Length: 149
Image 1 (cartoon, rainbow, N blue to C red):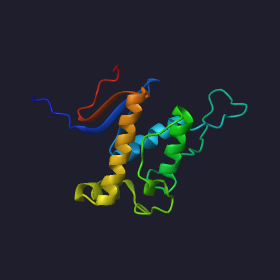
Image 2 (image 1 turned 90 degrees about the horizontal axis):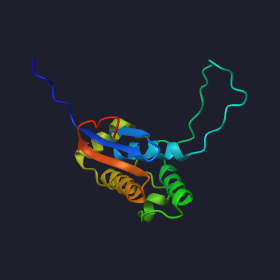
Image 3 (image 1 turned 90 degrees about the vertical axis):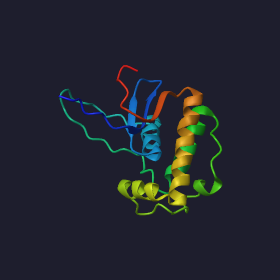
Image 4 (image 1 turned 120 degrees about the horizontal axis):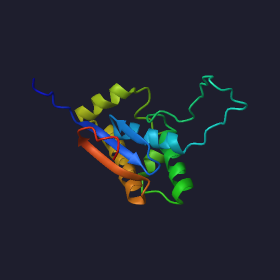
């Protein structure tokens, strides 16, 4: 029996804390990084063997507040951030309003300039995080990496 070749994964990375991320787009990968650095509200008086559901304060990567929050998180964590086009800092920058994850993937395949620029900026930020040592392994368009990397 012939083994089926595993398709390439667009983006995967491992952070210095050992956490791993696999994402279909750079903006989704950046959203997961932002979610890791956002302060979590502690559960008061947790009971053993209980399940608790908490709300994530991380906005969608296509929310107008996403990029300003990423920049704030970078500056809070590192004291600086990579250069990001000024119009992407503006919450009024609304090219992605009402876009879902699948819509963005379609626009990427079509080559819609605003979406391609936005995703490239997100990818540049992930590369910058690798240069800073926050991300230890970053792979793009490669088969799934082993979990022990």
